[in-house]
Length: 264
Image 1 (cartoon, helix red, strand yellow):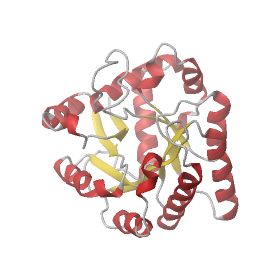
Image 2 (tube, helix red, strand yellow):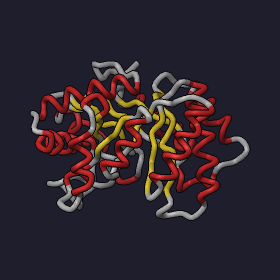
Image 3 (cartoon, helix red, strand yellow):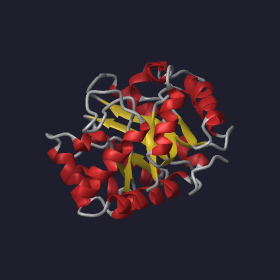
Image 4 (cartoon, helix red, strand yellow):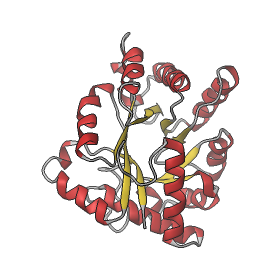
């Protein structure tokens, strides 16, 4: 069974001591590729170094909404240039809106639109973080689609209702499920997991956060994406192998990844 973890943060300090062992565990679990997200373009050198250390690791470049205050006059050009500088950059992100932890809504929205523009120009997909902002996110995306053209991408670590899920499916987006879907009280997400079309489904860990059951409360790592896939398979009444095949093909399609998982 081959899997792709479409959202990781293995550059965080919690992995520094045993990253080689973490890498061996994800390979043993059948993870053939990973997409490393970025919260600030200043992370680019460290993530790029990891992509060289692990040939199966691809990555994104962008600015997280909770880092919106770090946007400067040069950030647009910086993201644009970095995304053009390495063939292993497969997306813009993570980017989006977070109205749960920050009140600078206008600033977040402006930066979100700037990054959509970069993605459109470079024909790269986007990795979107959306928390307590689904309605405004939908409005901004609909306006951008109407005025500038559509952009491909994924709603990562998705936790929306079935209605909200349909909003972003209608915009052409993929939906990525994390370990949250395995939590006992995650009823709305589990309902959404059942209705996502086969061709739009992805899985992720968002490690080191949100470890799935049965690892909940521990440091999350890419090998645990297997638990997400197995849980989603059970929800949808299919085999884990079927979910693995589906989500692997979808990830390769969205991010233009080599099906073998080997680096470029």
